[in-house]
Image (tube, rainbow, N blue to C red):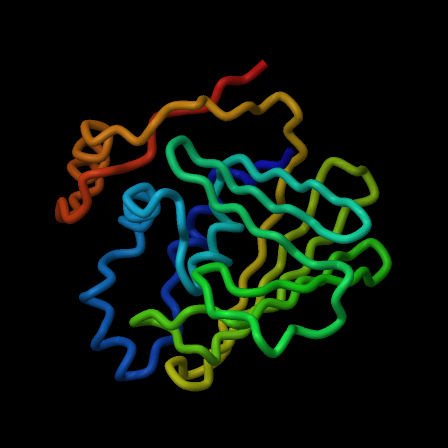
Amino acid sequence: KWVPPPGAIQVFLQPLPLNQAASAALGAVGDPRLLPASFCERGGEAVGPYAIKVGAMPVLHTLEINGKTVVMRIDDNGYLVERVVHLDQTTHPADVAPSALGHSIGRWEGKTLVIDTVDFAPTPLSSRSLHAVERLTLADDKRHLKYEATMEDPELWTKPAAFSTVWDYRPDVRPSGAACDPQNARRYLKDTNLKATAPGARSDGYQHR
């Protein structure tokens, strides 16, 4: 179990390097600060580049590793992003249908897990050409995990986007089990002076023990 520090939210909110066509479509997607509420409305399904950028959200991340897969779960009070990384594949299959989370294969480089993801379903901000490479490196103290990601989309972006943060080992953190709460969403939108375009949002807090 891992949790990025609160300041990692700034990484999540960094704008994508959109070209003119994608920038024109930004209004259809809305302010990225609203995306957690949008995830909730879609049942926790992050889309396109934000499926990768949630790695910088300061919420509970879990990793389950075995010989064939790594299951990554990002759990934030009302929505859940779950990805499967295939360790037993060296190339992406040719017949994979595009999806919101894409298709991920992984390999080990020493202490670093390298995840390569393609076959994202297109969105107003990203095309079928979106390609992401993530690197997770365990620190010597075994209590910190460096998370780095690079994404590129030559069709809709002017340059690659890169970011990194550090996940802290948090065995005490448990999901609250709370569902999305529209009242919390309205308070959140009011506090951040954002237009109320989405009725759902994250619920408060985690249980610590």
